[in-house]
Image (cartoon, rainbow, N blue to C red; front, top):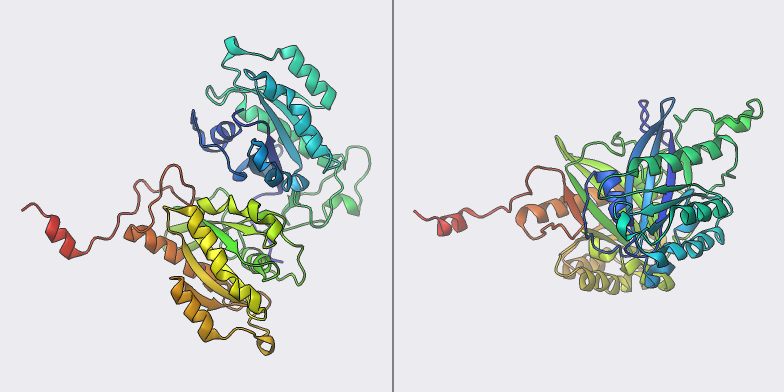
Length: 444
């Protein structure tokens, strides 16, 4: 497994959830923390949204925070619950002006503790700038925090009150719990991860042993860039594209992403529950950097209601089938149609991928018929093998280039309410206008 660049992007990665009723201000709080801006009325979160932030703890410990913004509405609870099992910290957030949101905190707390044995909590009373409208007293909030065994802090995204302090408090608490060996780190658990550059984690109570040196080390893991392009998580990028992986269960979506993002092949991976997240950085042209956000979706029918909520913010889609499984090929049209119907009026770019090309003797789908399907879907076709690493990088280079060309031509148009494409450039890509059209619109 490849290690991080010698300079070290981060030592520890902590996955933190923000939980609370709808409209308490979870998204506003996160946007203030990660983007240093305040949006009075952000769009309601659908399912789960992802943010990341780097933090440095003394003495020089770099921590990458994976922050998951969950939907507060009841109809999305089945989605958000699937993320509880991989959380190491939770911000329980209520609106100081909304008594019911305060009374719901126990329910959110119990939902998490029913799934996880050990999680660090922090109780947050949001919108403290609206003091004249308060419906919860300081004494009540502190009493609730005490009964939950946690601390309480008041915040305001509007005035930027205690925002940094809230995340610093929970990050320090997680790190201290780690030092005190309060977490039982298990393989397959993503709440906390270590890079190879992580310093030893020592307890205060006993001398160092072999088990104190952080032997469960994971490099270039989910949500971190692979070694093929050594950039930090918060490194500069010009464009961010959100890409969704689609296809039946067991076609190899997770294996392909693992090979691309982490540089490894895992023969038998755990089935994806709901949606998993990966990040990779790609440089297509000199000084033109792309940040790719991948959403790895579950292929089982029972998770389709979960994965559909992520379609609307996809700029690109990898339609994947197993070359040795005829049924997975025949289901591609329905996967494609689901996305197209959901993302309208946007036009995502697709690549059709026939995976497991190393099993040529077991092939059930001919290359010619796959190419014919790709043409009908206005997609390009490529065959891959996560096991042999054949064409793995080519898939994502092809898709990234396709999205970029769609932006340049004006076929794809980013907007403030759509997260499929984001750019840090001073002005958006201008559509390429044919010279003949230019002459038609000329006023001379």
